[in-house]
Image 1: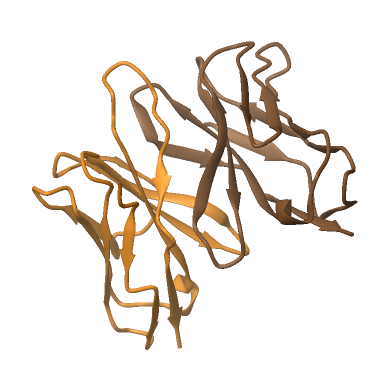
Image 2: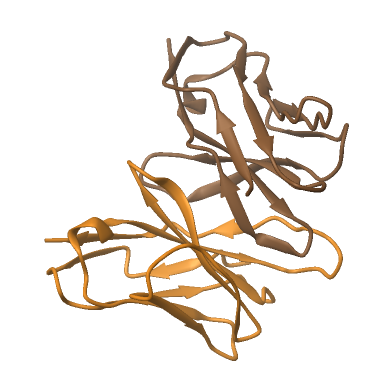
Length: 115
Length: 113
């Protein structure tokens, strides 16, 4: 069974540009979450999508947005990039079983560098 | 709000030493608790989990017990190997929001020969 796939693995962008990152979840998983990992702030939850709807959102500015498609693939977009957006962006998918927690499976991440 | 506190790293041990990484949490209700491991240049891998009080999660020689009375989920291993060198994250989530994880700051483990 294929794992969570994130593309691209590495990205360099210029301040002020926008960027789109992609995540393909494990087959059958309908929930996709995004996290930002930085040395200073650690791992922070960005948002979660379930069946094409944003179900949870973390404390990030509106420049960070996402969406989920009918095949559960997800994209996140960051507009007007700032130097502080440089981070490892991790995607996680899970099979969200009603009434019980399940574990999340993570992709290898996209390393975004803003210059 | 929810929070997870982990012991500061880095932790440096000799091979075959005993490992303990402390983790305590603050949360309402009865969260599920997890340990994730991150190897250099990689994403996170689930190491073990526990979903209710007194549950013990175990995997690859690592163990952690969900202690509700002390709100703790300490990670232990009896004999570490060089290949265990990585960053370890303690995390929690609530039922129905399994994908919204709250992480600790991570503890780097370095195992030497």
